[in-house]
Structures are given as C-alpha cells and as structure tokens.
Picture 1 (cartoon, rainbow, N blue to C red):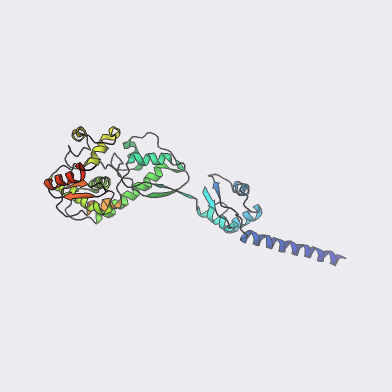
Picture 2: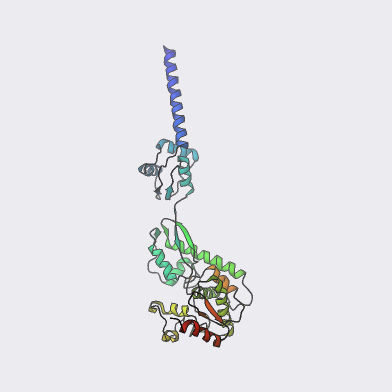
Length: 331
C-alpha cells in the first residue's frame, strides 16, 4: 500500500515537472504579441506595474514566467523607460530584451535647408511628441541654453531629419542639431580652398546662408558663391535680396520695394559693406561646401530666369541685358 502511495506521488511530481517544463518552454518560445501595439514604460514604474500594463494590452504572458525569465536574463531592475512598439510574434525573452536595451519607438522632425530659426522653433512647437521647455527666451538666452558662443543662434541648426524618443525636450533636439552643424562646418573648413575672403568658419557660415537662400539648385551654388566671393574681394556691395528680406522681419509682405533697398538695417547688403552680422538661414552642407570651394569664373552678377535657374554675367552691361530678357519681358 505504501509503495503504491509513493509511486502515485512520484507520478504526480513527474507530471508536474513535465507540465512546468512545457509551460516554461511555451513561455520562452510561444509568441506573446498577436497584434501591433504600443506600450509605454514610465519613469518609476515597478516591475509589477510593467506586467500589469502588458496584461492590459492583452499580451499573452504568465506573470510568474515573465518574472522568472527576467531574473534569468538579469534584467529585472534594468527595464528602461520609454514608449515601445511591439510587433506580432515577439516572445517574452524578446520583449524583455527590447525593454532592457531601451529600443524605444522613434519619432522624427525635419528641418529643411534654408529655414530660419523662427521657422524651426515653430516646427518644434507643433510637434506633439516633443516636450516643450522653451518659453519666450530671447535669441541671446537661447544661445546661452545651447552653449553657442555667439549671441544669435541663427544659422547654427543643421538642416536634417532628427530621430528622438517621445518627450525629448526641444532644447535637446536643438543641441543635437547644433552639434551636427559644428561638425559639418569644421569638416568643410578644414578642407577649404586657400585665399578665401573669410577670416573664420562663422563668416563662411554667414555666406553659406546667403547662398542657400539665393538658389535651391545644387549645381548653381558654387557659381553663386563665386559671384559673392568676387564681390567681397573687389570691395563691392553684396546686394542680395534675401538679406534685405531677413532684415525687414515681419515688415516683409512678399515684395521688396525700392525704399526697402535703401532703408538701412544691419542686414541690408545694398547699404552695408561686406557680410551681414549673422547668418540669415540654416545652410546645408552643399551650400557650405560651395562657399569654401567657389567657382573661379569672372562672373559678378546673376539674375533669375524664372525656371529656378539663373543667368550669370561678368559685366554690368551684360547683366542689364539679361535682366531685360528674363525679368522685364516676363509676362
């Protein structure tokens, strides 16, 4: 009788062990996620709270095995806060790895070439997944926050697409874009041509912003840069409309009048000699490269043809002729 009882107990224990093994194997290998979904782990969430969130999303986990596998992987206390996108087919070990490595969902924001600081700040303010910490800082205060050495951060945000996690701050994104501009400008400055009329990378950045605003055609940028380089070397006024527009600020309503060209502002290059005090936009790498490798022709003038390109001329007489052809006769 006793032997029969012991045999029965052993059978039960064996069945339990086999059942545990099957259950454990299922926990390791069976897909826990059936539909694409997003789970957010907030800072301070306990391990039990994370399990509750997963269960609330109908993720097929057994809390015991989830804890056991996390302990086995050594990640129980290492699950990182973030917003995670889980895809169908993921197992418990894969979910834990994603959380432990912090593979949080990424969002993007794009700053196009030629945008001003004002446009970039407006774009950031519209993004629903950016934590807005900036209020009404002056440009000098913003420069201080970003640790930019000049008092105006215009021109220092590199135009590109940036990836970030939910609730990244506006300042952190701007710092990343500033660091990228520093890197690009330094790289291009190191390989610049000799005998250019720029005393510093910042002066080249200012000119690059003008070239960026003058043309969106990549192949024309070296020629535009060559015209302005020649004007600087000859002591001529730059006479570029984008600087006038920038200096007008909110007064610009889509048209430059004759009196605007003669109204003195720090940015009116029809009046001031040399470069304006700051960039007027955010130039891309191509514009920076063009300024530091300008066309070596003898052109001093250019006029828009109306098709996105420009007609270049070495003399004022030829330029006036081109203006007559492409501007005055335009219907």
